[in-house]
Every structure is written in structure tokens, then in C-alpha cells.
Length: 158
Image (tube, rainbow, N blue to C red; front, side, top):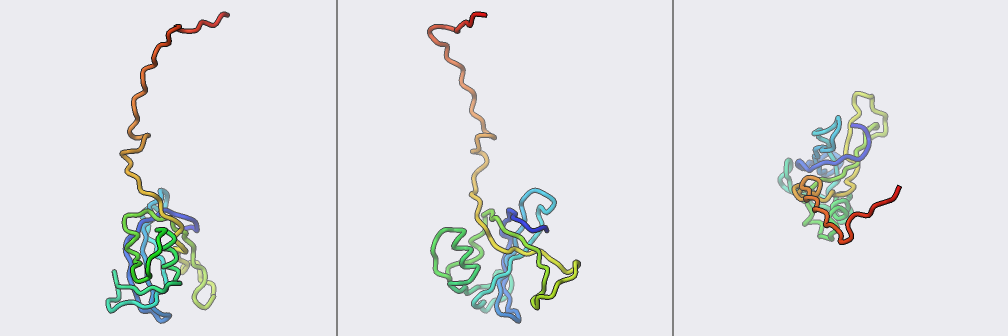
């Protein structure tokens, strides 16, 4: 997927205890129309700890200063304690995500073309969800009939 901003929806999240510490993987599905419609792209975030259940929908302990905490608070414009923040807050929302291509490994060595992959760099903003049946373009109001004036039509001489 080329670098850029795309509209996406939350699919799921999972947790893992990797060699570099606990991680949270959030999977998004791109809903922007185009050649990458319906493709899945992952976002990886560090966590302070993961609960006993590791894997799909595992419990997460976030730090106050983690990138995931910052992005979720920024998206929803409300201050919450880190233990009450969850990626499941994204359910039912369209999120604008910034996608980048990973070109180097963890040791800063360039990856061959076949091993390059796309990942979500950050969540930019939420798009407001509006019921499309209320949109004026899809449900137009009838044009009112013109009311005749008292003086009648104005004639313009040639």
C-alpha cells in the first residue's frame, strides 16, 4: 500500500509478549475507495503490560505516556485514566490513518523489495458518522411554486 492517509475501520486487536516487550496489534480495514479498498493493515503499539490472556482481544495495561494512549485521547477528545482506554473504543468509527512503508529492519538495515511491508504510522482523526438518509442530496425537498407579484411581470423594451 503506498504511503498516505486512508479511511479505515477497526477490525480487531491482539496482544503479544514479544522479545522487545509487550505489544498491541490493532488491525484496520481500509474503506477508502480505490485499488486498496478492503485491504487489512496493522498498527503496532508498545504496552506497559498485557494481562493473563495473550492473543486476540487480550487485556492491555497502557502507560500514561504511551503512543496508543495519546492517539486514543486525541481522537476522542476526552481525558480518561489509562486503564479505562481500550482499542475497542474504535468500533463503529471511521478513522483516518497514516500508512507508511517499512523499509528497514530493527537493526536499521535496508530490507529487500520483497520484504517491505505497510503499517499504520498513526491515527490522524475520526470522521463523524452521519446517517445518509438525512443527507439533503439523497432526500431533496420539493421546489416551492413561485408566488406571483401584484404588479405582474416586468416588460423590458427592445
